[in-house]
Image 1 (cartoon, rainbow over the protein chains, first blue to last red):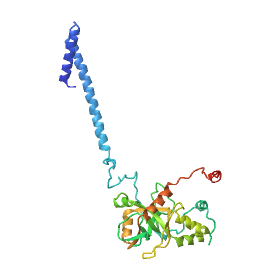
Image 2 (image 1 turned 180 degrees about the vertical axis):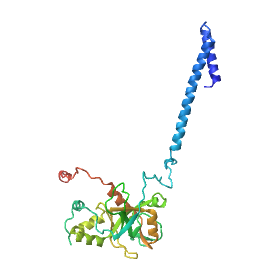
Image 3 (image 1 turned 60 degrees about the horizontal axis):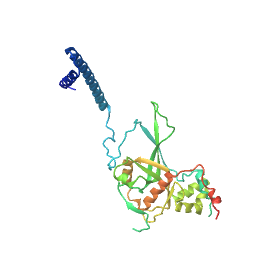
Amino acid sequence: MTVGALHDSLATRYNREKAQSQRPITRKEILVSIAAYEQRLQALEAAIADIRSQQSARDADRSIRPTDELTPDVDHLLVPAVPPKQLARFPAKLCRVETGPRDLALSQAEWTALNIGEADE
Amino acid sequence: MSNHDWYELTEGSSLLQGDLLKDCPVFAVTGSLSWPPGPAADFEIEAKVFDLVVMTQSCDLENEKVEDVLLAQLVAWSDVVRTEVERGNDSVRSRKFRKLLVDGNVPGLSLLHRRDSRPALPWSVVDFHRLFTLPKAFVTRFAARSGPRLRLRSPYREHLAQALARYFMRVGLPHDAKAFEQEGGIM
């Protein structure tokens, strides 16, 4: 609320109360009311400034996430590459090259569950 | 190309689901792993060479939606029989087991048809118990250097993908309904 609007509001109130009451509102009362409103207005403006500064800090800290610009139900060329929580690189030495196993990786339980029995040939 | 041929020939770096890659290495860190590693961490990796089948969806590969490729082991049937018999498992030689494979009724396994013309392929089994991922860039380079190679045709490639899905989606019940075989015979 601007100070001008505040004056208008007080003037309206003054006229209304003057019409309702024969007791005139003193100049001192009007000044006290204006001071109270201005105090509240300054407190509100300080609070808004504080909230705006906090929001700016949050915006600065917040990195752009891969999903921020994705539109639902639209086919995108790339799956968002969410970075790993931690990435560490270490040197390693290739120590062995060998042929992989050539059996079936069925467990004994799986063979049993197949209920095949022995070879029939 | 015969309609009976499960495969088509391809060459170059393009990758699709159902592409066969012969003698492709997969890499693993050997020894015991611990985290975080100490300051003197000395990692050793080993490469195991497998025949592999690309299992990642073709559209994901073509549209650059994946950074890694899912691969499953492909093993020649003759090698399966030899190694299983060597370790004392004669069940692998039974006709019933072959029938189960033909019908797609062995969870985790999928039979691939032989191919006589070059490049030839013996009767083979895809084993979903051995799944690997490799960086797509690596697999692409490997495929480009592989010369003419086999690619499963549709609908055989989808049939293979369905076998993997069936393997992955299966649910074991703590108490099954086998009693119905006996108790259901009321007619």
